[in-house]
Length: 504
Image (cartoon, rainbow, N blue to C red):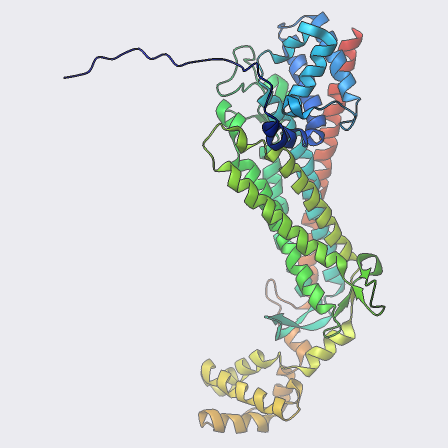
């Protein structure tokens, strides 16, 4: 038997007339209002755009537009620190609304037409982030250009490249340093993609399904300098993946620079003495007069870790169900601050690299005294004597051990030493030309032989550095153009507001 259906009426009480709990103010509203300074400028622009949009459509009169925009101009010319943002009112938009109501009374209500407060904050966040993204992109590109220039300068600064802090193969400092440039350029390209996605307008999206008052969403998008609208209105209001991608790229950029900082900190020690940081990037010990600490490198490494924490924190809050405030209220301040600090750290890395002092003599001495030519020697034995590589590997390993125990260097290995090891390890007789062997053991000739694409040969490094530098300059110029565009758009919007208020 099917049970009869019954009507169900949910109990809808509407807004509460009670004052918010003090605990809610301290744990929630105060957190939101702490981000008011970050959103202040973007909210000014968002409010200007919305009022002009309403006026353009004939929804509000000339008089109403002039009155509302007049008050908004006062807010615009008030520093965020001086504006009466009140945590008891909740997020920043509510304090602004209170200010407009106090100035205009019911006329202020027109500011709500067709737009929830969340939309204003979403627009403001993107206005803030697009500039910060372009600035970080430019910083990444400038680091890449600087590193490319320094790498070209050290294309013939010979050193033993390392893995696991152990000498690996002969190379150059230029080739080593240049390895940090392609990741930076890829991050810059990713930031360009992120900027394209950030600079999309959620304006006119309403809360979830748009507004019949604002049918043409492109008008306010153009007014605010967005490249396009975010098509799906619910996605426009509640998307988070774009911000995850942006933060993730910031983490990637600083992680690459942190690797460099880790290496340089080790290499600047007295034990290595490969490099020195310029004085302005160091800090003295207050106790030990002989110490000058490479303090900038600690900031770079720590900044990378902090940004990883910001990304992890954001991921933790955006896993909630869709269309929930906690998806983004914690992002309003966290993401802009993270990007701003990432740019500062990236600028610091560029400064360290541009002024870095490289101890070329020490690098050469470490290379000359080591055995980094062992791989080339094993390949030479394989090719000259017709033995398989594994056998050649074992022979050379034995030669290196014997030479090291005898206080000899890699360049001191001779034919007789190899013959002895071949008999001892593999029971074979080898025939090697002494002159050809000497050439194979020369680190400079080994580096010169690495002339294939991406290799360490000086001309290859110089060519790569020039190409990377050109790419970096192009990306930096594009970012500068974007920043200039954003400035001009906001200047034009302000001019339009001032003319409307003046009745022009």
